[in-house]
Length: 533
Image 1 (tube, rainbow, N blue to C red):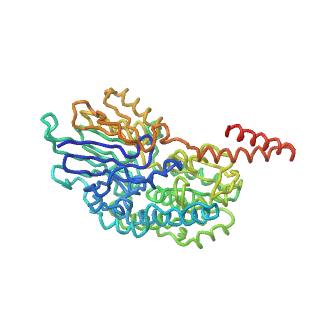
Image 2: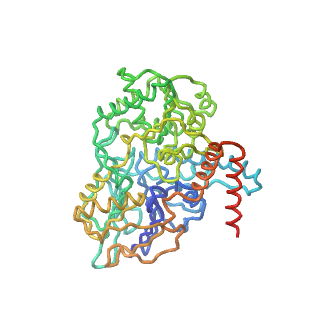
Image 3: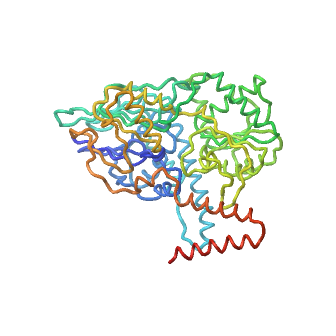
C-alpha cells in the first residue's frame, strides 16, 4: 500500500489546516479548515477544493476551531458522505461553531451583495449555508481518547489529548504498507498543542517512536514567561485597572472557544475577590454564549470545572444574543467590559464595537490571542494610526494592548521539547501551521537539540510527499499550486490598498490648505497616468 501526503493548508500560515493522505485503496483528510487573514488567502475558501470531495472516504478532525474544521460543510455540500471522526467535545463544539460560521457568511455576503449591486458587480454566494452546516454535523462520529478506531482496512487512528481546547486531539495514524522496509507507517498529526499549564486541561500527551511527525509551529519564535494562575490574575488585574482609569470601555476581541471562557472566569474571580471594580460585563457573541454552554455541559471533564460552573452563573455577566441587544451596549456609559468575537477582529460583532470605540482615547482594546497577517487585529497590533472598517476610515486613538497570557498554543521551547519527547522520529518532522519566521525559529531550536536538519521539512501550500520512499519526506511531485509560496502568509495588495487610502487621507489632513491638497492630488494623478503608459 502506498502513502502520499499533500499539504493543502496551514503551510507557512496558521490557517486552512488540511492534509490529504492517499493510499492505494483510500483517500482521507486530517482537518478541513478555513483560510483566514488576507483577502488573497481567504479567496481560497471560495475556490473548488484541490481534490474531489466525493473521493474522500473519511475525515479525522483534530479540533473544532474554524481554521481546522471550517470547510467541512463545504466538503459535504460538494459530495463527501463519509464519517468525520472527532472527540465528543469537538463534535459538540462543532455543533455550534459550524452553523455560526455559516450564519456569519450569509450576513456578510448579503451585505457585500448590496454593495456590489451599487457598483454594478455580480452577486456572490457564501461557501456554505446554515442548512449545509447542519447536514454536515450528521456525519460526525464521536470517538474516545486513547482508543484505536479503524476507519478503513489497513488504516488505524488514535486520538490523544492535545491540551489546546475542549476536545482537542493529536491524532496518531498507522497505515499498513506492502513495503518490506516500512510494513506499518506511524504518523502523528499534532493538531494545536496547548501550553503545559492551562485552566481547564492537563499537559498534552502523545505517543513516541514515529515515522513522521506533522507539527504546528504557531509560536515557534516565542518564549513565554511561565505564570501560575495567581500571577496571571495579577497581570490581568493591572491591565483592567489601567483601562478603567479614564472611565472608558475595555474591549476584548476574543476567540469564542476556550479563550473566552478562561478570560471570563478570571475577570469574574477578580471581581468576586474585590480586586477590580464591579462593572457591567457583556459577552457579546452568540457563538461564545453557545460554546460556554457546551463547556458547562462538559465541566466534569475539565480541571476546575466546578469553579467554572459557579463563575458563569454570576448575575454580573450579561449575554447578548440578538443584534438589537448588542447595539444597546453602545448606550452604556462609564467603565464596562465587552468580550466579543472574533479574536482576530476579522468578523463578528467586535468590528461594530471597534468602529464605535477605536477613535475614543479612553477606550482600551486588549488583544489576547494570535493575530494572523492581514487581519484587522494584526494591523492594530502593529500600531496603525487609522484603519478601514466597513468602508469607513476610523482613527485609532484607543490604547491597543496585547496580553500573551491566554494563548492556547505552546511556545517555542515547549514545542521543541514536545517534539523531542516524541523521539525517535525516524523519517521526517514537518513544520506546519506557522508563519515563516516562526517555522524557521522552531527549525533552529530543533537543530540545536541535535535533530537532523535534513529530516526537518518546511512544506509550502499544495506540496506533495511520498511517505513510503526511501528518502525521508521526498517530494513526489510539485503539484499544481493555488498560490505561490511567497504570497501565502503575507500582507496582500488589498492590505496595501487600505494602507494607501489611509496614507493619502493622512497627508491631505496634514496639508496646510486647499492649495497644498491640490498639489498632492495632482501628483497622485500623474503617478497613475505614468503607470498606465
